[in-house]
Each structure stands twice: as C-alpha cells, then as structure tokens.
Image (cartoon, rainbow, N blue to C red; front, side):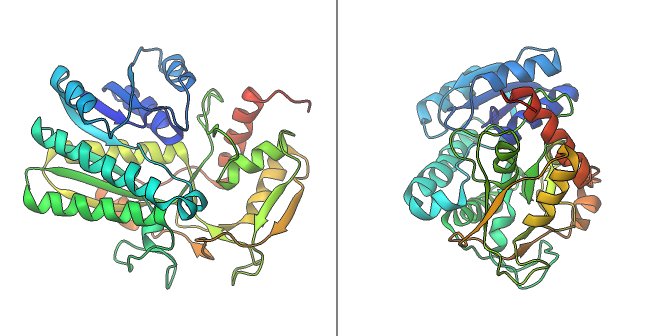
Length: 336
C-alpha cells in the first residue's frame, strides 16, 4: 500500500515515515528541501533498514504532482509540506498563504483527479488562537493570531468543505501541539536550517555551544512564572498518532478532527530546568520582548484522540529532553 508523504524529509514527516515503514507501508516522499535535507532520507533508510523512494519537488508544481499520481498507485497522502514559523509568517504572510494554502488546494485537485480518497493533514493548535480557557478541546473556539495559524485553519476549512462535496473522501485532521524530542536511536531529530524558531532546537543549540544564550520571549504572561506555557509532545508519540489516524480513515470514509497533545503544559523556564537536569549543566538565557503572534498558554485536552484513535501520549518531559540531547550529541561538533 503506497503512501505519498509530502514534506517527508522534515522533522515530523521523517519520524512518521519511520513509523509507517514499521507498520509495513510503502512510501514515496515528496519534499522541496526548503527546511530539510537529503540526509533525512538516508537516515530514514538507516533506521528502518529499507530503501524509500524520494522525489525533490514542490506541492505547488501541478505537473509534477500529476506525474507522480499517474505513475504510482497512491492509496493515501500524509500531508506535512508547509512553512511553519510563526514569526516569519507575520512578516511574510503572502508566502505562507501561497505555500501552505494554495499548495494544498493543488494537491487536493490532483488527488481528486486520480481518485485518491485518503488524506491525513498536519494541522496545529494555532487554529485555537489565544484560547479563552485551557485545556483546549476540539469544540473550543477557532481563531488565529498569526498568518501561519490562519493558513492551517484555512486548510482545515477547505478539507471540511471538500468532504461535504464528496463523502467518499476520508480525511484526518490532526491538531498537534508542540513536538519535541527525537528518535530513540539518536540518529534523526529536528535540525532546522538557519536560526531555530522553536524552543527545543534553540535550547539545544545553546547547550551544545552553537549559540551563546537562549532568548526567552516574554516573562510577563499570566502564567506560573510569567513565561509562555505549551503542551510539549514527543515526536514519536505524535508519529504514532498519525499512523492510528491513517489506519482508521483507510477502513471507512469519515472526517476525523482531533488534538494530539499530552494534556499538560510546561512553561519555558520549566523546560529549561528539565533540560538542565538531563544534560547536567546550566543553560544561559536572556529575557526578551514578546514575539508578535505568541500567546500565554496553550495545552490540549487529549481525551477525544484516546476515544477516536485509541491513542495517547506515552513519553514524559524527561524522556523528551533525554532523546533530544542524545540526538544533539550525535550531530554536534562540540566539547562536553
């Protein structure tokens, strides 16, 4: 059974690819390598012990997509391709709407033309905007505070409209919170190109000496210590959630919308402390101004995922930090 994985060379996509192979699926990865590298494909093969098919290209290239679907019997799509930096999206909104929204529309058009009915979409908790209350469940109000979140919400709406127009479609929309950590092998993890936008890779680069200090954006939020609170979920837990969703939508035509999170929030300072505990040394940091589009607190009510997908997060914050550090030591050229 052939699965097209868009953005499969990226952080989350690559971990999902490993779990797909573990479950016996055949893969075709499509990625433009804008925030990943060909090394990811080699590492997926190293961990899984199997070769995977890879095409370098963009989901906005309709001719390329037509060729892929024409020449391959694709059963389902795992859709991860998209730009994902909140701050950048505020400064470059049109780039995000073009890449994320228009790219998805083109993908869906080609899927429809070739009779491919199954898609799992990588959405985000940013569709909840600045939540009125936490934990956040799937019935919480939807709103956004930045173009990245808006692009995800637009795609969700498009997918739901698409499903209403053709209920032979089968769609999984997964709203996940803050992926962190790495594969337990230490061979693959998040290695962003340029300056990291998310806390954990930035924290890791400070820990390895690649950067002098961590910037904590805002310490005046109404939270336990004034810093932003997020629901951090191990990337392998997240990947397994995708497999569960895929297996369900392949069995019956339906639309699934669920949160993937742990149900517990940690502040930035709590994450720093947890990481320091694992690595055995202090992380220098400096308080900076809030970033545009950031919110105070965001963590999931994950009960629906447990009910619908028979899934729940297994790894705790210590395991997330341990696996992240193991990965960083593998790739880092630094002195302990």
